[in-house]
Length: 213
Image (cartoon, rainbow, N blue to C red; front, side, top):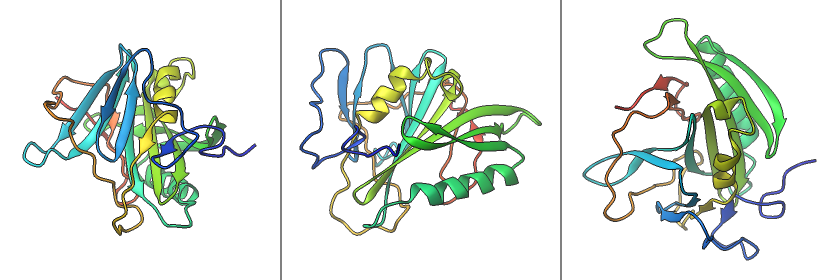
């Protein structure tokens, strides 16, 4: 059965009338501009951002030994970019010496991979890619650590992904261009060392593993 965004669940568009309320009993609502998230208590939010502009270059959420990177992109009016992204990811991962296959998950076809870790010759780290197409946008999640292999370890991060709101805006953008995420007011970038995480943009570069410190 094909997952139907906005019918079977989120991620949601800002115009979705059937979307659930963001005001939940537990957790905190965080507005990153193009992306609004409801983050449960105990889940850490880590960002890398330009200190001058406040624009976020990487957004990672941690839940114990699991991590998830999120990035919204502009898409075509006709949508349907995820199959193309899957092909791009498979080519990039294979070319860089990793291992990759596709599998069926909660949101449809996923990319399950072992990716070369930069600075650690021959070391492979697990990553699982999930994508959902919305109206003129596309939201990609990369699950890392335990969440890349264990669905139980990924439960809370998956809930964040499925409850996300994407604010596309009306400006013209090239398909595949990242939507701008900004730091919420009075927020500092987190410089703690997160789970080793893939810094992956399937539209412009091949995959690699990076660590923030």
